[in-house]
Image (cartoon, rainbow, N blue to C red; front, top):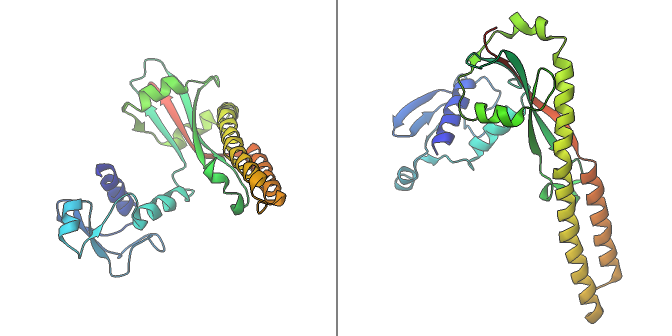
Length: 252
Protein backbone atom coordinates (compact mmCIF):
# COMPACT_ATOMS: atom_id res chain seq x y z
CA UNK A 1 0.00 0.00 0.00
CA UNK A 2 2.97 2.29 0.45
CA UNK A 3 3.59 2.28 -3.29
CA UNK A 4 -0.08 3.04 -3.94
CA UNK A 5 0.12 6.01 -1.56
CA UNK A 6 3.30 7.32 -3.17
CA UNK A 7 1.75 7.00 -6.63
CA UNK A 8 -1.45 8.79 -5.64
CA UNK A 9 0.34 11.66 -3.92
CA UNK A 10 2.54 12.21 -6.98
CA UNK A 11 -0.42 11.91 -9.37
CA UNK A 12 -2.52 14.37 -7.36
CA UNK A 13 0.38 16.80 -7.25
CA UNK A 14 1.03 16.43 -10.98
CA UNK A 15 -2.57 17.27 -11.89
CA UNK A 16 -2.98 20.01 -9.30
CA UNK A 17 -5.45 18.18 -7.05
CA UNK A 18 -5.65 19.83 -3.63
CA UNK A 19 -4.85 17.41 -0.82
CA UNK A 20 -5.10 17.96 2.94
CA UNK A 21 -3.64 15.58 5.52
CA UNK A 22 -6.42 14.37 7.84
CA UNK A 23 -4.57 11.68 9.75
CA UNK A 24 -2.35 8.64 9.20
CA UNK A 25 -2.67 7.78 5.50
CA UNK A 26 -5.95 9.69 5.39
CA UNK A 27 -6.51 12.70 3.13
CA UNK A 28 -9.13 15.24 2.15
CA UNK A 29 -9.01 15.34 -1.64
CA UNK A 30 -10.57 18.31 -3.43
CA UNK A 31 -11.25 19.15 -7.05
CA UNK A 32 -10.13 22.78 -7.09
CA UNK A 33 -7.31 23.62 -9.46
CA UNK A 34 -7.21 20.35 -11.33
CA UNK A 35 -5.16 20.69 -14.50
CA UNK A 36 -6.86 17.76 -16.23
CA UNK A 37 -10.36 18.39 -17.55
CA UNK A 38 -11.67 15.70 -15.24
CA UNK A 39 -9.48 13.70 -12.90
CA UNK A 40 -10.87 10.13 -12.94
CA UNK A 41 -12.98 9.15 -9.97
CA UNK A 42 -12.85 12.62 -8.37
CA UNK A 43 -16.32 13.99 -7.49
CA UNK A 44 -16.93 17.72 -7.76
CA UNK A 45 -17.36 18.03 -4.01
CA UNK A 46 -14.17 16.09 -3.30
CA UNK A 47 -13.94 13.32 -0.71
CA UNK A 48 -12.01 12.04 2.28
CA UNK A 49 -10.10 8.83 1.59
CA UNK A 50 -7.72 6.53 3.38
CA UNK A 51 -5.24 3.85 2.39
CA UNK A 52 -5.48 2.18 5.80
CA UNK A 53 -7.84 -0.81 5.87
CA UNK A 54 -8.58 -0.65 9.60
CA UNK A 55 -9.46 3.01 9.41
CA UNK A 56 -11.71 2.41 6.41
CA UNK A 57 -13.53 -0.44 8.19
CA UNK A 58 -14.14 1.69 11.28
CA UNK A 59 -15.46 4.73 9.39
CA UNK A 60 -18.13 4.40 6.72
CA UNK A 61 -17.66 8.01 5.58
CA UNK A 62 -14.16 7.30 4.25
CA UNK A 63 -13.28 6.06 0.76
CA UNK A 64 -10.88 3.12 0.88
CA UNK A 65 -8.22 3.63 -1.79
CA UNK A 66 -6.44 0.58 -3.21
CA UNK A 67 -4.83 -0.32 -6.54
CA UNK A 68 -8.27 -1.53 -7.67
CA UNK A 69 -10.10 1.71 -6.87
CA UNK A 70 -11.45 3.52 -9.98
CA UNK A 71 -9.49 6.65 -9.09
CA UNK A 72 -6.21 4.75 -9.01
CA UNK A 73 -6.83 2.74 -12.18
CA UNK A 74 -8.17 5.86 -13.88
CA UNK A 75 -5.07 7.85 -12.90
CA UNK A 76 -2.87 5.11 -14.35
CA UNK A 77 -4.84 5.19 -17.61
CA UNK A 78 -4.65 8.99 -17.66
CA UNK A 79 -0.87 8.96 -17.33
CA UNK A 80 -0.29 6.07 -19.71
CA UNK A 81 -2.54 7.61 -22.34
CA UNK A 82 -0.77 10.95 -22.26
CA UNK A 83 1.98 11.82 -24.72
CA UNK A 84 3.79 13.74 -21.97
CA UNK A 85 6.49 11.98 -20.03
CA UNK A 86 7.25 9.40 -22.71
CA UNK A 87 10.81 10.61 -23.26
CA UNK A 88 13.52 11.69 -20.87
CA UNK A 89 17.24 12.30 -20.60
CA UNK A 90 19.21 11.57 -17.46
CA UNK A 91 22.85 11.18 -16.45
CA UNK A 92 24.61 8.57 -14.37
CA UNK A 93 27.72 10.50 -13.38
CA UNK A 94 29.13 7.66 -11.26
CA UNK A 95 29.47 5.30 -14.23
CA UNK A 96 32.96 3.87 -14.61
CA UNK A 97 33.14 4.62 -18.31
CA UNK A 98 31.86 7.51 -20.34
CA UNK A 99 29.19 6.54 -22.86
CA UNK A 100 25.50 6.42 -23.59
CA UNK A 101 22.60 4.01 -23.14
CA UNK A 102 19.26 4.20 -24.87
CA UNK A 103 16.43 2.59 -22.93
CA UNK A 104 13.14 1.88 -24.72
CA UNK A 105 9.81 0.42 -23.70
CA UNK A 106 7.96 -1.21 -26.56
CA UNK A 107 4.45 -2.57 -26.08
CA UNK A 108 3.50 -5.75 -27.90
CA UNK A 109 -0.14 -5.39 -28.91
CA UNK A 110 -2.56 -7.76 -30.57
CA UNK A 111 -5.21 -5.89 -32.54
CA UNK A 112 -8.20 -8.22 -32.94
CA UNK A 113 -12.01 -8.09 -32.85
CA UNK A 114 -13.29 -8.05 -29.24
CA UNK A 115 -15.21 -11.30 -29.79
CA UNK A 116 -11.91 -13.19 -30.10
CA UNK A 117 -10.78 -12.15 -26.58
CA UNK A 118 -7.18 -12.16 -27.78
CA UNK A 119 -6.02 -10.42 -24.60
CA UNK A 120 -6.80 -13.64 -22.76
CA UNK A 121 -3.75 -15.14 -24.43
CA UNK A 122 -1.69 -12.08 -25.37
CA UNK A 123 -2.40 -8.98 -23.27
CA UNK A 124 -0.52 -5.78 -24.03
CA UNK A 125 3.03 -6.76 -23.03
CA UNK A 126 5.83 -4.25 -22.31
CA UNK A 127 9.27 -5.16 -23.61
CA UNK A 128 12.23 -3.28 -22.14
CA UNK A 129 15.43 -2.90 -24.13
CA UNK A 130 18.67 -1.04 -23.48
CA UNK A 131 21.37 -0.58 -26.11
CA UNK A 132 24.71 1.17 -25.90
CA UNK A 133 26.11 3.76 -28.28
CA UNK A 134 27.15 0.97 -30.69
CA UNK A 135 23.63 -0.47 -30.71
CA UNK A 136 24.66 -3.54 -28.69
CA UNK A 137 22.26 -5.14 -26.21
CA UNK A 138 23.19 -4.13 -22.64
CA UNK A 139 19.76 -4.69 -21.09
CA UNK A 140 20.89 -7.17 -18.45
CA UNK A 141 23.77 -5.00 -17.25
CA UNK A 142 21.64 -1.84 -17.32
CA UNK A 143 18.80 -3.45 -15.37
CA UNK A 144 21.19 -4.51 -12.61
CA UNK A 145 22.24 -0.88 -12.25
CA UNK A 146 18.96 0.94 -12.88
CA UNK A 147 16.72 -1.37 -10.86
CA UNK A 148 19.02 -1.19 -7.86
CA UNK A 149 18.67 2.56 -7.58
CA UNK A 150 21.68 4.01 -9.34
CA UNK A 151 21.80 7.77 -8.59
CA UNK A 152 20.53 9.32 -11.82
CA UNK A 153 20.40 13.07 -12.41
CA UNK A 154 18.14 15.06 -14.70
CA UNK A 155 19.98 16.89 -17.45
CA UNK A 156 18.75 19.66 -19.78
CA UNK A 157 18.07 17.81 -23.00
CA UNK A 158 18.24 20.93 -25.17
CA UNK A 159 21.95 21.32 -24.35
CA UNK A 160 22.85 17.89 -25.74
CA UNK A 161 20.16 16.92 -28.20
CA UNK A 162 21.98 18.50 -31.14
CA UNK A 163 25.12 16.51 -30.37
CA UNK A 164 23.10 13.28 -30.16
CA UNK A 165 20.79 13.95 -33.07
CA UNK A 166 22.87 11.94 -35.55
CA UNK A 167 23.15 8.78 -33.42
CA UNK A 168 19.75 8.52 -31.75
CA UNK A 169 17.70 7.33 -34.79
CA UNK A 170 20.11 4.45 -35.37
CA UNK A 171 19.93 3.47 -31.70
CA UNK A 172 16.13 3.55 -31.76
CA UNK A 173 16.23 1.22 -34.78
CA UNK A 174 18.63 -1.11 -32.95
CA UNK A 175 16.37 -1.18 -29.89
CA UNK A 176 13.37 -1.93 -32.10
CA UNK A 177 15.15 -4.87 -33.71
CA UNK A 178 16.04 -6.16 -30.27
CA UNK A 179 12.44 -5.78 -29.13
CA UNK A 180 11.25 -7.73 -32.18
CA UNK A 181 13.62 -10.55 -31.25
CA UNK A 182 12.25 -10.64 -27.71
CA UNK A 183 8.65 -10.44 -28.91
CA UNK A 184 8.90 -13.65 -30.96
CA UNK A 185 8.99 -16.10 -28.01
CA UNK A 186 6.13 -14.19 -26.37
CA UNK A 187 4.04 -14.64 -29.52
CA UNK A 188 5.02 -18.32 -29.79
CA UNK A 189 4.00 -18.95 -26.20
CA UNK A 190 0.65 -17.25 -26.73
CA UNK A 191 -0.04 -19.27 -29.89
CA UNK A 192 0.91 -22.49 -28.13
CA UNK A 193 -1.53 -21.70 -25.34
CA UNK A 194 -4.30 -20.97 -27.87
CA UNK A 195 -3.74 -24.31 -29.57
CA UNK A 196 -3.56 -26.14 -26.25
CA UNK A 197 -6.73 -24.70 -24.76
CA UNK A 198 -8.91 -24.58 -27.86
CA UNK A 199 -7.56 -27.89 -29.13
CA UNK A 200 -8.52 -29.47 -25.82
CA UNK A 201 -11.99 -27.93 -26.12
CA UNK A 202 -12.38 -29.31 -29.66
CA UNK A 203 -11.40 -32.79 -28.49
CA UNK A 204 -13.96 -32.52 -25.70
CA UNK A 205 -16.70 -31.61 -28.18
CA UNK A 206 -15.70 -34.45 -30.49
CA UNK A 207 -15.93 -36.91 -27.59
CA UNK A 208 -19.33 -35.55 -26.65
CA UNK A 209 -20.52 -35.72 -30.26
CA UNK A 210 -19.70 -39.43 -30.33
CA UNK A 211 -22.27 -40.10 -27.58
CA UNK A 212 -24.58 -37.09 -27.84
CA UNK A 213 -26.22 -36.24 -31.18
CA UNK A 214 -27.12 -32.79 -29.82
CA UNK A 215 -23.48 -31.73 -30.32
CA UNK A 216 -23.46 -30.62 -33.94
CA UNK A 217 -20.43 -30.69 -36.26
CA UNK A 218 -21.02 -26.97 -36.86
CA UNK A 219 -20.05 -26.26 -33.25
CA UNK A 220 -16.73 -28.03 -33.66
CA UNK A 221 -16.09 -26.26 -36.98
CA UNK A 222 -16.92 -22.88 -35.40
CA UNK A 223 -14.44 -23.52 -32.61
CA UNK A 224 -11.80 -24.50 -35.17
CA UNK A 225 -12.39 -21.25 -37.08
CA UNK A 226 -12.16 -19.33 -33.80
CA UNK A 227 -8.79 -20.93 -33.12
CA UNK A 228 -7.53 -20.10 -36.62
CA UNK A 229 -8.66 -16.48 -36.30
CA UNK A 230 -6.97 -16.17 -32.91
CA UNK A 231 -3.71 -17.65 -34.18
CA UNK A 232 -3.74 -15.27 -37.14
CA UNK A 233 -4.41 -12.25 -34.95
CA UNK A 234 -1.67 -13.15 -32.46
CA UNK A 235 0.76 -13.90 -35.27
CA UNK A 236 0.16 -10.34 -36.50
CA UNK A 237 0.80 -8.72 -33.11
CA UNK A 238 2.82 -5.53 -33.49
CA UNK A 239 5.26 -3.52 -31.44
CA UNK A 240 4.55 0.08 -30.47
CA UNK A 241 7.30 2.32 -29.13
CA UNK A 242 5.87 3.67 -25.89
CA UNK A 243 8.76 5.39 -24.08
CA UNK A 244 12.40 6.37 -24.58
CA UNK A 245 15.07 7.37 -22.09
CA UNK A 246 18.58 8.51 -22.92
CA UNK A 247 21.08 7.72 -20.14
CA UNK A 248 24.41 9.53 -20.27
CA UNK A 249 27.21 7.65 -18.59
CA UNK A 250 29.92 9.54 -16.76
CA UNK A 251 30.48 13.29 -16.88
CA UNK A 252 29.45 15.16 -20.01
